[in-house]
Length: 337
Image (cartoon, rainbow, N blue to C red; front, side):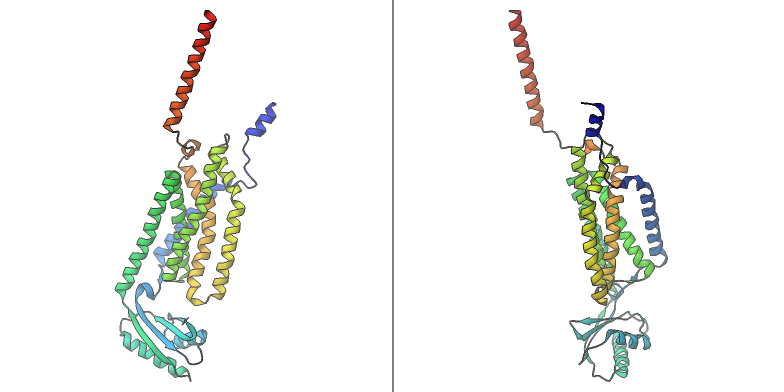
């Protein structure tokens, strides 16, 4: 076998794209986005919805259906610029959410809203119900939502550590925190309303991004065990190339559905679709450049991912070695005789 043939068999195929070549600029970009997101949260904060701040919920019924844009304009003219309006069950049922006002009771607020809407419309508007969500409920939702995200991250940390290696679990958590912080940062800078649907989207982003990361980690571990030559960076790059088509197909098909929801789903899921679109784009990026990159920076290597040697295997090898030594000694003894 020639030297050239040997080199061909042992060299590592990096794939079509050398992702790891730009991993340092990618990490710098991620750090810049994280700092910008945290700055947005510090400077502008989140535009929390009635679910978190408390407020008044008014349910109305229109005999011939209601146009939401006209209804919003009527509320803006009446001085309720931040009111949320959406259909509830059918086009004739409307749900209005209004933030609390310090100098106005809930009953007075609902009466004024009804009076302004009836004055602007010729139809007979029926008031179905009025509910007041107190600030205590909002505080409980905020703390419960934060705990839900925290518990999800801890569970993922344990799961990935048991399935792969502790440094991979740190890489997965870094990618998930990266995705959630950047998504929340976009909501802070754009002041899109942050409500319970957006919180649910954040949990969905964690699940989506983790699934992508686990698939990449599976291929990285497989390549570490199969490829004898190559640095950890080269082996990881090949794994990313192997999974590139799968990652792109999954992300693009998911984005198609989310874009359709964004434009056709109505205001009730506008924030949900927006958060998921941001999360899918950022999550695809982080599964390539954050999760694996952090694991490599922590020093993960081929030896860390090899299957453990069983105690029985050692005893069998020792027994075979003793058997060979015994036969060699017997052969020498017969020759001397």
